[in-house]
Image 1 (cartoon, rainbow, N blue to C red):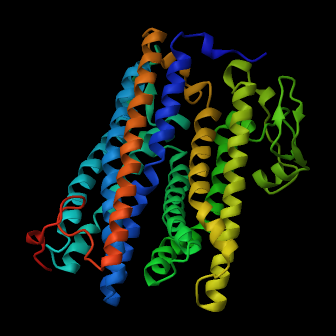
Image 2: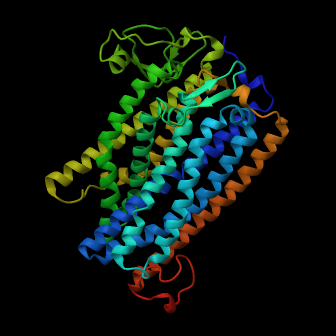
Image 3: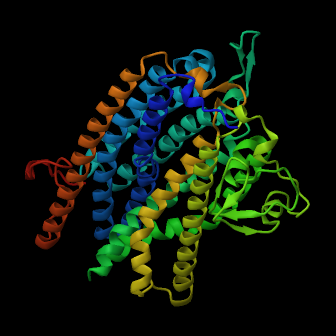
Length: 469
């Protein structure tokens, strides 16, 4: 029988819910935070190289969105940092010397990015075009460095390494490189990084796919759609390869999580791949489509490959039945939507290659308009797979979630969660409202053929700010 770990600590359930809520919220901002600077610089580079004022207009507008979402991401990211200390004090007390390295790197990257976003944003019409572009090149590596720091800490939680534990379980020595570059980092970093660029590309392109469906098909709309969608489409085959390698590595390094992903109960060869479906406490699968031997073939390139099942592990050292089902459905959602995105990318690249122009099918643009939301669902599903599948461990096979949670009363954590829901709701309202007002302003500018965003990014119009470049 599965152990109900939520009953072990009174604050465990609200702490897990709060962490899940804030992580799910924050990860919505991460794709644009990491990838939008690259897309903006790519568009600016096209504008400078081709002397295309439309490309420069698009880049300038994207830079405003980049700055707005960075400000919101700074708030939600800071809250997450505090939550580690408030909700999981014993985790940080034991492993802070190792995990803190990644968070320190992320902090430095954050300040670097903040400085150069300010320079880039206010450098329009104040710096020479090439100088402005070259200064902006700091932003993509700063975003990558921040992502590396966070993922290094998360990878430590999945495959801990680089630490020496004493008899009482406390860290007595830290190998800096070993703690940063754990076994999971290679596939986790690249899988998530490519996912961020895919999501940002599909999300930005989806806005202009909607405009296409509404009849706006001028050079502005075509260019603003083509650049991000092409980036996403070209990355799709790489993501399929990295995802395959990541799943195979997970079967080796975190077999309990992999068994939950595939809802495998018995250890066996010729293990089937189960699509959808749910598993019960006796290991019976309901409502799923079973493809014989496919899972063993995917793991070891042979149907004779043995895959370990959930029953091979003690009940208190593996995900519960509910957690296994959540992990499996999240994994299937990620793979399923990713496959649809790959098919859409193939369609797009085939038309570009054969006809040397954008697709003209309304069905293509209907799917492209949904691709942004679908990509975000994939990112959320990926995080659910990673975090829920690791249960009951907060540091895999070393420290349980119940051992790390705060001693604070459950009522305090519930109250904190309620306050955060209100705060995040207010943030979302103002964020969306601001983006809608920016969109309305830009439409008015296009109708009047005004220069984009003269002066401050979102402020009163005044010619005295225009100095030329």
